[in-house]
Image 1 (spheres, helix red, strand yellow):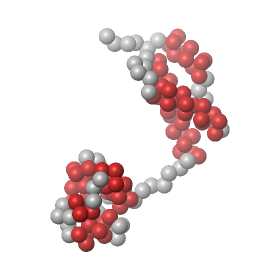
Image 2 (tube, rainbow, N blue to C red):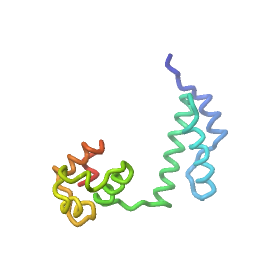
Image 3 (tube, rainbow, N blue to C red):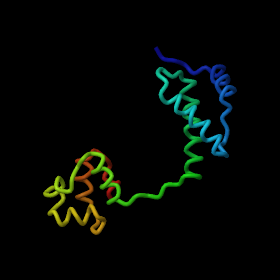
Image 4 (cartoon, helix red, strand yellow):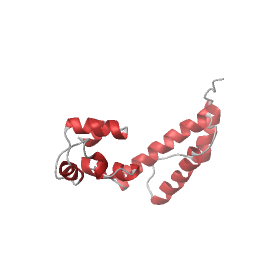
Amino acid sequence: MTLTFNPEIYSNLLVEVTPKVIETEQEYEHTLAIVEKLTFKKNRTPEENALHRLLVMLVEVYEAEHYPMSESSPDEILRHIMEASGTRQADLVGILGSSGVVSEIVNGKRAISKAQAKILAELFKVSPSLFI
């Protein structure tokens, strides 16, 4: 059974929530609370899905403006993935090269080659572009 989008139900949700461009921290917190509630709600209706997508976009715009994140370097990304997966430098020896090469890559003293990026991408199941 395919659920269809009901504009009247959506209009009622919009009136209830009144989404708008987020301008203050208080509005941000309020909108974020609604997003979290919708995110974890089971069996959202098509109207709730549409509202969720709209509110997420508003939150992302506010966060990009007020909480900008600097871009991470390939070695920082590698260290983060290694930590998250429990991978040690020793685990990469032989896969990427000698222990010296691995140490230089992990510590940002040597760039990750395209071939090494492909190997890391396959190992960690991510895009090679993260390491280039």
